[in-house]
Image (cartoon, rainbow, N blue to C red):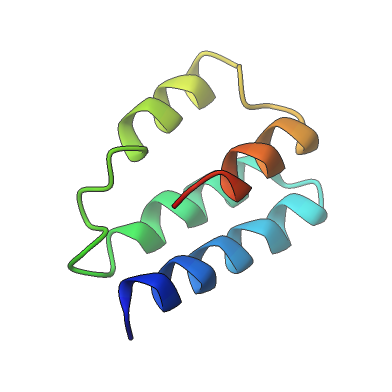
Length: 72
C-alpha cells in the first residue's frame, strides 16, 4: 500500500467514528493507524493532535472532522 492509499484508509476509518459522534475513538484510530505504515509512523501531526485533544480543543464532531480531513 502506498503512503497516499494508507492515508486515505486511515482517514476514512477515523471519519467513520467521527460521523457516529465518537470523537475520542476517531482520533485514537487516526493516530494508531498512522503508526501502521513506515512512511507515516512518525507523522508530524500526531503529537500536536494528541495535545489538542488532551487540552479539549478537539472535542466536537465538527472540530475532529476538520482536523482529520486536513491530514496529508
